[in-house]
Image 1 (tube, rainbow, N blue to C red):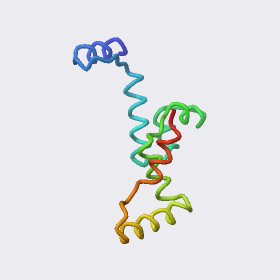
Image 2: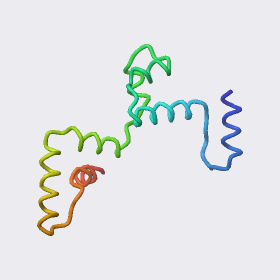
Image 3: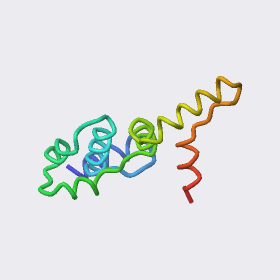
Length: 105
């Protein structure tokens, strides 16, 4: 199955290698980003230990920023300050995204 999948990906012309594992990883990541509970993803992947599922998946930076903005206690204060600044003629800024970008190497 893996060889067949790899040949389909190679023949597709995307220019990147592919395998069943890649599709499995992508499915799990997209499900988590879409809001699926990690325990359901764990069951779909057949992992006995949740730590295997946590390592297997990645959280996108965009999703991380959205979760921060929606749940961090200080995010409401930042959003209020941005709205007040916009009302006073100041340009709105995406402060959480700027802070994360500043931390990137």
